[in-house]
Image (cartoon, rainbow, N blue to C red; front, top):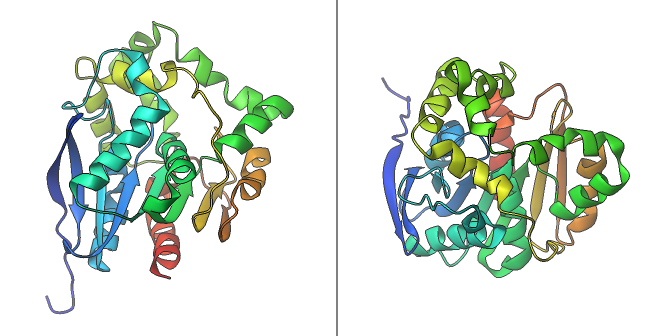
Length: 282
């Protein structure tokens, strides 16, 4: 069919000193590199639409299943899921592709990792885009001063409980399914539940919450940044979202999306992808 471009999404393995990460990728090998980081309880698959379109537009887009989500990098101890290790994985994956600098996109937990990476390694990033998750400094301030955010974030403590896995996986993952608020395609939710039902997988994912707080604070970010926040986000309220710009010293763009939930990459894939293309193309 003339004029119809089909973007092939590749399944790739990424070999690092920590082990082998699973990833999806699209676009020319010499395209401008973009790395995308998923959140909980998802996988690189959440970025399928964005990877395909970015690849079609000439970027080399890669989304990888992060530590604990890739079976090849699934340490048992919760302490091995701290922020330093997660940021280290981002750099290790980029290094494996030979990327001295790259664009970084993150959502949910992947967004937190993206903020930390930009704060600590600005020399490695060309541009940053974060969806949903406010800057860790803005979130920490909101947790101290805003009762609404304190209540929204209560789950982060609850999930450290040792019976969380059993509760989330009961009745074919009913609690996991409910998290998506019926905003994510059912087939995609089925796939996430299937993956997290594999032995050890959900414990590894929850170890991100159990690893303990980072030793230091995330600093201000000098990288050109776009932050996308949706008004119906159940996890992150407006206080931290609106204060995030105070933590960016470089060029900053804030996009507030009305009537969308926390699950923006899959609930509004075309809208988010168009914003990413605008931000990353300049």
